[in-house]
Image 1: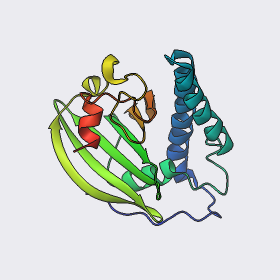
Image 2: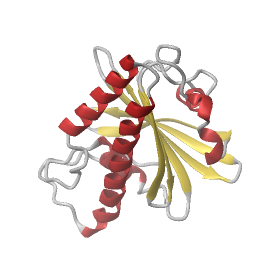
Image 3: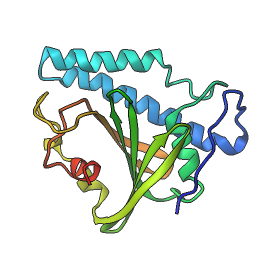
Image 4: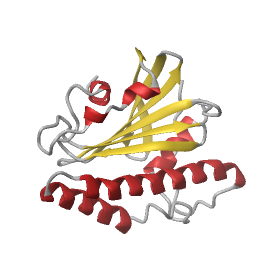
Length: 198
């Protein structure tokens, strides 16, 4: 269903055909940074505030807001460039769940959720060496409004996610909501956890 995309080399110069993806990545990055900043203010403990502040600092260091630079190798950009060849997001609602699992090897997993009425197609990808590889695909009864709930974020060290999780909802070319879960803050009974532990 989704075809592979070769890695974008550091000398890439973006063409007009790339502008919609670049605009989307830039908007996604800005909203993600805003979500992280808000998470600092909403954190229940000082330890949690420090962890979110560290994420903001690391994001600033990697300059995610400069995705149109010539040395761009953004995982988000590569992901969207790949899935746009098979998934037409025009006039559609869709979501992406990003999971970063740190250890001896850092693993990046993405879950693309395409809504169609009460049904959703969920496609799992893993970033391997230089491209996103499709791992599996399945269907669930799921609407966008049901993906995230207020009780999904739990106290630090009470959650089940062993890596950072970022959930973004989109409508057509626009991100509408970004929620950031640092390690062990995603509730086990959340729909998001149900998807990433599938």
